[in-house]
Image (cartoon, rainbow, N blue to C red; front, top):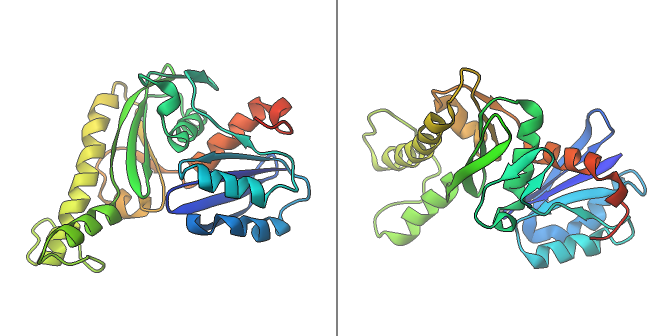
Length: 247
């Protein structure tokens, strides 16, 4: 049994993996990271944990403290090369750990050129080529951040919760919903045009907003709800000797 934990800006997603499948999955607010102490009571006793974190040192400290009675957590840190992937970022260690884990997870799903999209608080759009090289990627505000930016920085535009995407929007709410959606889809499809270097190229998409985007994509795609957690499990499988060792 291995516990995988993905600490994002808004949510912490966790899963219990039995070696073949996920036997339980859950989420909680990142602001309530300390609640992992209660959540973990239902996890298999002494099961090691692997984690990634983009929510800052305070959250990482809270997670470590919450699971202090268990073996030390194996934290995934981006590197120049790992798990068959080469990182072409100018400073490899500055790549978001969640993006790195998603790339590791994606590599286990396909050996073709692929676009790896994480649609959360921010939307990240990363190109992993067929040889396993991370070629670079985009970061843009997620859908909710786009809505909030318009609402907080304009006088007359509302915070959208009920706008409908439309090819020809004819009210302000639909115009906002459609504009923000087109920005997301356009960025994904434009980046895919670079990644589409063979007929097997595919977009692999994950994250809380993924299901809002996928109905509108006009490229080959596959929704992979646990891609970041899958990447963590693969990383842990390659570093079993470190699962009980503090980094």
